[in-house]
Amino acid sequence: MRYLQPMMYQERVVHERLARICHGDYNREITLVAEDDGEERSIMGVVRLSKVHATNEARMSILVGDPYQSTGLGAELVRRAINVAKREHLERISTTFTDDNQVMQHICKKAGFEIEPSGSEKLLSASLKL
Image 1: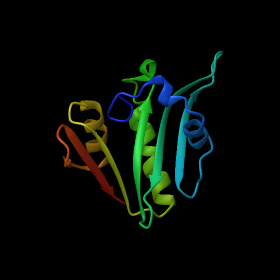
Image 2: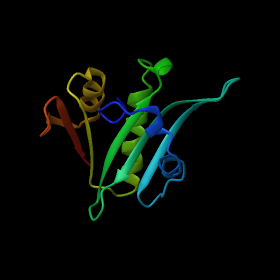
Image 3: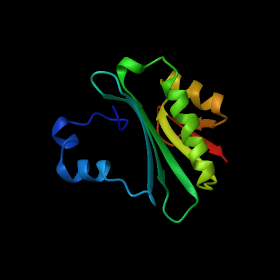
Image 4: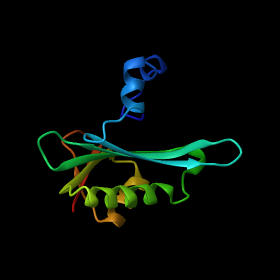
């Protein structure tokens, strides 16, 4: 459900998609990665700010690995993304998530986002004016 709908493995590993994700264009996307640098290095979570063309806004997406859920990592990633957005002089951050995602609702409310129903059924939109 990474993209609010199931995505088949074959779609997730298409070369062009992986190349775009791995080789970010800082003028369009800013990605922060939380990494566990223990014995077996692993990615704990990722937050991405994707700048909206012809605006001074960005869409935020976040993913926290299952072993790191409920540790405060998601809130920390959002906090750091907000700080980066401010340093980049962005005016607004927005995100969309399913209405049953209580954790994301809590994180967004705590960070000062305004949350409202999205145009789609069962989705919420959150935005933060910086």
